[in-house]
Amino acid sequence: MRSDFSVRPGLPADALALADFAARTWAETFGADNDPADLAAHLAAAFGEPQQRGELADPAVRTLLVERGPILCGYTQVRRHEPPACVTGPAPIEIARFYVDRLWQGKGLAQRLMTAAKNAARELGGQTVWLGVWERNPRAIGFYLKSGFDDVGTTAFWVGSDRQTDRVMVAPLGPTPR
Image (cartoon, rainbow, N blue to C red; front, side):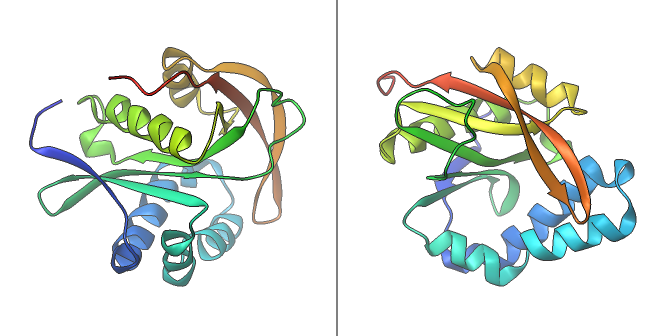
């Protein structure tokens, strides 16, 4: 990846920009496959500025931003969260969100962001990292498999009133790479 990209912790002052970016990238990724009313309900519930501000201030959440100068190119949120029963590894930490703007996909940002997400999970005391990914998102599933995750089961994910199925993927966390 080019050296003019940086990964940094998100701050409460980033809440508005992150809310806009998160809602836009989620809608671009999943909007065409969801009912507009369900999509609008999910975006309002998940990506408002107040919610982002709260998550950015929460000590149990690590939000990492990938930027190129002042441009937000991607982000991840790693958190302590109760895993589904199919996650059996020790000290599990969730990668709750992981998005790279379409403009920047295929440029090595996702792999760099995944390394940062795994390091953040270690900082939260994790020995296992897990995530849910929509079963109808083969590109993301392929990326997670390439990143060392195994598919261990399913969990429900609600988009508005629509119950969807996420694949649950897990990876062990070794020591922090040097």
